[in-house]
Image (tube, rainbow, N blue to C red; front, side, top):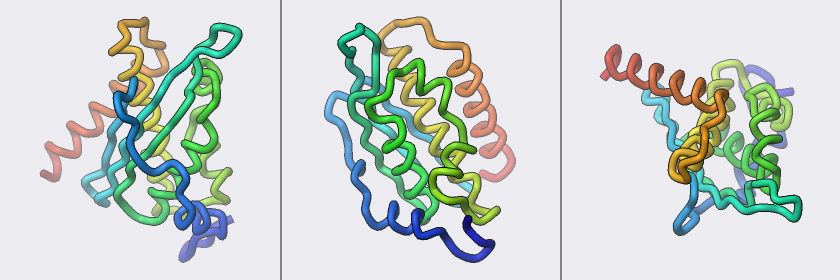
Length: 159
């Protein structure tokens, strides 16, 4: 578990060895979130396919994260965990506590990075459903509304 003043070995490894960095040309879903207070910005690109059972899954995830070590590590582990998974399973499993556990913890003042990673993937999935004119799952609608409201509040208060 991370202590208050340093990162776990896993966080540092994920930061140094990014396998999902980059863009997907003609991505089917794109999610972008940021935190103007700390400067972190995450953009997630998705390629969606159907498996042999006819269920949609995330075939490929690519990320562009501009920010601190924790932001980069949490977006990388998010891509690693959810690439190749069926969308319905992603929607059930996607939460910041899972991300925190998988990176071995973060200092308390960096926990928001795990929420940003979850939000970026949620927004990419929301964007996919919207672009493909499919019914957007309630959980994604709820998260999208929260993200929009938080962004609005921050801009009104600080920018």
